[in-house]
Length: 131
Length: 371
Image 1 (cartoon, chains in turn green, cyan):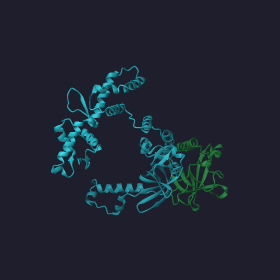
Image 2: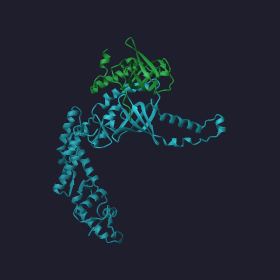
Image 3: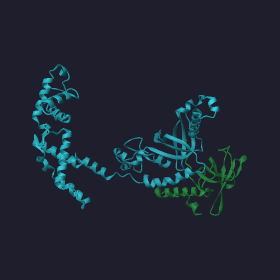
Image 4: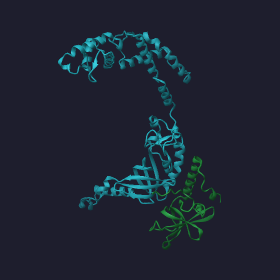
């Protein structure tokens, strides 16, 4: 009845093969484009001098007021997209423009390292962070 | 989820839970931990997280599931580690919110402060804060319950959090690891004093305090020797063995500090002990005089005979024929005929002693008679 929990992922960790399809994720990014007729949006973010894009399927959260250029938080399930990529099928799509992205990233990293230290949880993202 | 015998080792006795500050607080736990923590094997409805007893929690998360019932909302809350169901009761005030708010238009139009209008606005704001949609941020405080095998939070307090730039969420994420390290991950250790006293309690009727030891020593002596009356200097030597123990303890802590001398300590202890025994009714002074003579209540044959006589004679009176004599009547008679200084406690001790010997019979809590 209740959906599975959606842990935070960095946008550059949302890649084909990194997570199984259907996994619940939560990530962030700047809305760069929105195609209402296809219910598709693209979030992009900067990491280590390269641009990362996350495709979002917005069918479940429409109608919403898209603000291109604003920061968004997306929570949903991974699904395969056209061209072999992955997309997030959004359950929650919130505009959080004005968010301190650096602080958010620090908070995510702190939480992860806390879980690794205290409960010896395997780092689910070690493969991706090593890249 | 069920208590297993191995895990119960880290569960402290429920009597001592109140000493753990986490117990009475709303614990800010990750939802994953709330879902996984073990239920106590002593008290159902209390959960054990890392030896801390917990029943109230405080969570912040995004609403990912929502169901409305007649008198409550059921929200699924996701904090990134787990999803838990939160039962959020509707406020009673909502029921009558459709009632037309009657207010005087003339006053409202004149621009004066209108209480009803403000109350209506306040109710609207309150309602808007407690009706959430999927994607809203919610803060819930409440008690953890297990309903049909599923953990849930029965909210005592909840509201929609306005967090447009994620300030609240980020500070929550950064605060929780610190709280865990400072508090929840540190096992609950009992203060050493309580563990000591509980261990002595287990070994027998041993008093933790010096005063308790002293009064027990005196009582034992009086009983053993069947002492009828004594003066304070007669029993002073009995308490002497207790004093060196005290002074050696003091030496360890404050060797240089000049504490009171042993005779002074002894006199003080004796005075306090005699006072305690008088308060309990074990001993009493028949006459207050400079000569400190104490009578032992259980050995005072004159007092016993007098009480028996009072009860026997007065039970014949019509007033006391049915139930026997009331304690207060016995006390006032005994005061007149024996000692003005007779306290209620002394009388109770004497009456109990007489009843144990079957000399008198209690008919109610306060009435005594003889056969």
